Length: 167
Ligand SMILES: [Zn+2]
Image (cartoon, rainbow, N blue to C red; front, side, top):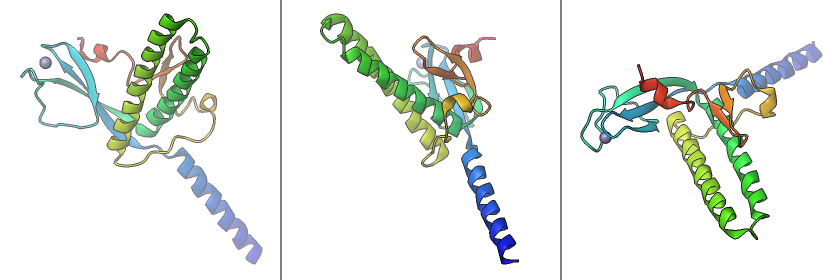
């Protein structure tokens, strides 16, 4: 009797743990396009009544439902990849000029990934844990649209955002 209770309790805990590991963080991000400046940016702030660009033109908006946790997991992976590239590049520092501009480009890229992480956390209203496990084993959870030449993963949300505004 006591034994079976113990078993069901541990099963329950296991189930809870698995649920927590698989839990999605549904949320929204929005792409913003200014038709006058032809700029594209994303935001975690949803503005149901629309908004105006700094140039004064009304902004076109495209709201996207997504799993913030999946985006977070993908972006952490990208940052790790960029760090590997930075590390590799640092071994070529002797060839100064090329390596410096590549280094700058990599750091700018890293910066933009870190900004995205911050925005995702803001959209989630707090801390996000990435999905546990290896990125290769969670293809069903991650909306990966493309892997680029650098090995960075492009999620559905960040894939060709300009196409969201072309009829
Ligand atoms: Zn504008």
